[in-house]
Amino acid sequence: MRAYNLFRRRGEAELFCAVPQDVPVPSFVTSDDWEYARPLDIETLSGFDATAAQVSAAANGFYLFHSAS
Image (tube, rainbow, N blue to C red; front, side, top):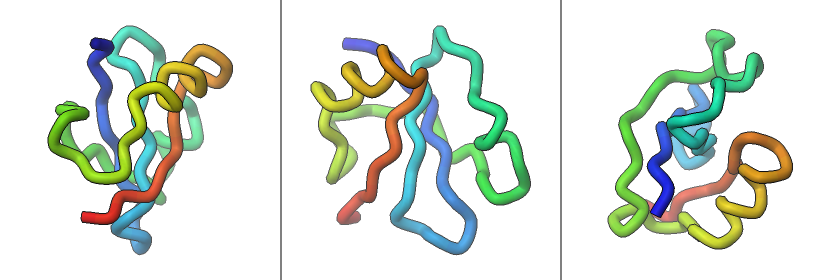
């Protein structure tokens, strides 16, 4: 499985951006509106759809999603 870095939107605790570790971080994620959360273990994060993440990362370089936990 692909490894991701997880970023959280400040002020919206359930909005995340997962960026594959081998892809440059998109410029919008480097703004003050986002903070680095942690490396992503996709098995333990609610709301993370690995298949959708792979499709989105291939097309966009990142995957935006809401987490239920």
